[in-house]
Length: 281
Image (cartoon, rainbow, N blue to C red; front, top):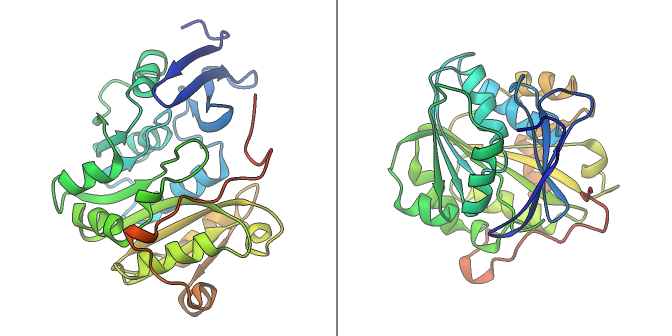
């Protein structure tokens, strides 16, 4: 691939562009319908450009001993940023990527191929259907970063969906999800309540400005049945260019308040981002 030439192509669920980063050789930004989806540096797969991706990376760093191989399921493929990250930070990991857009998977495989020896299997499938039919007790971590356009699909927000994710996880496994919202956080609070109906431990990571209601933004949620190393997570997120807060325990229960878990019949997609919240080129 010519290192300086953008690629644009219609995929199954939109119009995708791969644009080179003028500041980093062999680094690429993927957008779908103008919304940034992924950033990948082929020479430095451990480089995570987007803040939410860095936060997911921090969680992946602390869920097990440093460098230990993990079995990871990624819901939502994008440009395979986090599978590449896990492959280099936890060599020998086995990973499954579930992406509904086959055309997008083919575009990424063609122009941003995975490194030799990466144990990553790609599946063109709906995330929930794959979880409901995939191998039980087979994953240490499930990472959900699924967007239909700029919104998380409704069928990936209910208790039944979370139970499907829990079914695939081993005992002690972790579920990670990237969710967008803004004050008064009706969607985010309902998602925390939904996760709390299935898992015992919850952690929320987000920028203080988002939590104070100043702007729309992403929150990373971590759920499981064993405690996360919150102190280590707080140190890592505090060191980022845009530091985040890590909430858990009583403060998080207070944030959830009287929000109720979401049933399939009541499920709605995540809120529409305001104009310009995530748009680019």
